[in-house]
Length: 115
Image (cartoon, rainbow, N blue to C red; front, side, top):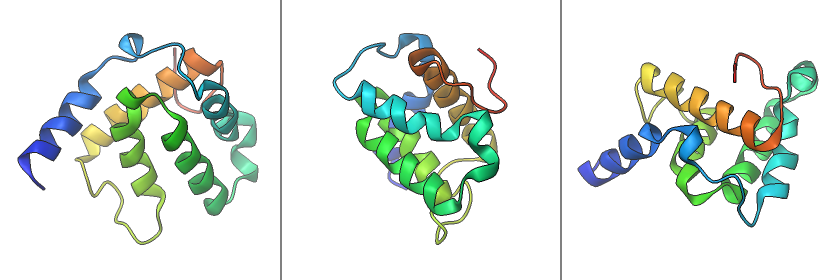
């Protein structure tokens, strides 16, 4: 992986959710897709539905969160290896950062996220 990509990815996930925007042009679309991942919906989601919602969230997310969402989307793609872009520890940190942001920005209750 080129050093510039690593630096962007590392720099991106070091941003705290509190420093991300609370308003952006595609917030309504982002939050509508985020509801797919609510605790109450977990038993009803197929892999394809998870991937479609995650891709839609990536496209409608604030620019400052796109690299992290790309990592999460890549993890859902069947052909990719889990956590292929980052270590397991970094993946967990990204998951928590994105989850906390989603809960704060959209009011969505996600599994294993405490805000």
